[in-house]
Length: 493
Image 1 (cartoon, one colour):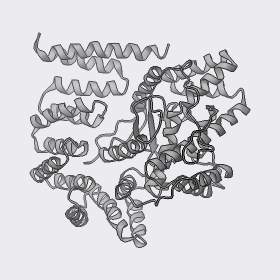
Image 2 (tube, helix red, strand yellow):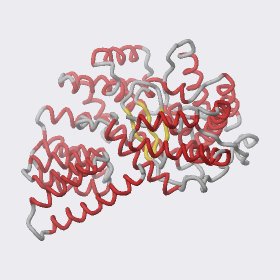
Image 3 (cartoon, helix red, strand yellow):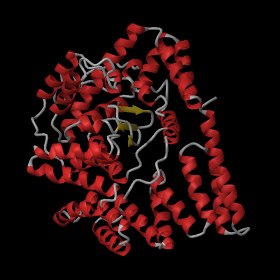
Image 4 (tube, one colour):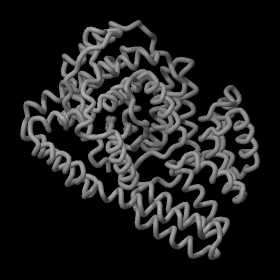
């Protein structure tokens, strides 16, 4: 399925919030592999910021991100990082909030974490993480920042030293919701007063996140050397650059840190960093569709890689080429690649998705629908297959079936903009104005455009019969959105 119209969404204070430059965290040790220096959770920071308040801030930031920065709403890539992140999270300790993993279309190398269990990954990271284990090492590091509640602990430490500094930092976080750039400037000004403690916060938090991250990697079955390899490659590649990538600005890599990552890895049972077809396919998808290289350079990249590829690496690289051919309407070339791939691996979501694009572009709507329904019998409720099926149903003109399916989908996945976008399109094409307004209203709410969301629902309510069930639902949702807007505004005051 081709990506739906992108919802342009700035990172606000996201990369800054868990940037080590403003964090502090003394730590103790736990008896595990590498027990002599594995840090403990430390203070719960309950006196500074409650878990509930963290989640409120996190939800607010996420809505603003959707509205101001190019998040990648790609079902396959979203599922991939969700599965990988969940695997790591299942082995983490002291997880206090739900977690959300998402992608930002940005060629720079970076990952970041912020309140409420939100972890963002730049698509540029896929270029430099050569294996799934290396990407997992970055994710596990960010998970550790969140489970350790680094920002809240830093705020608590500052509160003990200076109540005024604490008040200023809280004010800066609130300000960032109302005016992102002003908020960032305020946070920077607040922490700039004590440069030495700022450096100490960087060291202690990064050490803690590395150590706990490696522990998570090992418990999840990954090669613990993945973190060291990634750090070493990054340090070598950008050693002499005048403008290092954001990852190195927020995650400094002194020689001591790289050495410590290797030493730490040696204390765990050795595991092989196995080839992951799913990672290779996700990486190819990023390079083909989200890399800023353009079709010609992307195609050249795949062709160069194929010259030295091992046999098990060929399929994913060819898949990337097929996507480029699809996107440039070279359907014969795409089919020549995709047909054997799907035949050899008929349940592969990446190949099913690409073949759906191929069928729909060639007006083979029923063929795509039948294939997807059969696949859903094997994987019921799979989000990738469900979205592909509903996309195909809309293209075929089966709007009512798509609408019924998408109501279930959006109920189960209320934060998935793809579902609401498809529902809006299905209603529009089925000449149902109030339904289209409702679906668009939910997209506005996910982007913190509260006035627009409420306005949509008011219009929808006026279009349906007085006293009808639809009107009751729309009016109830207006009340909910009004309360949500009030809570959102309270964070700014």
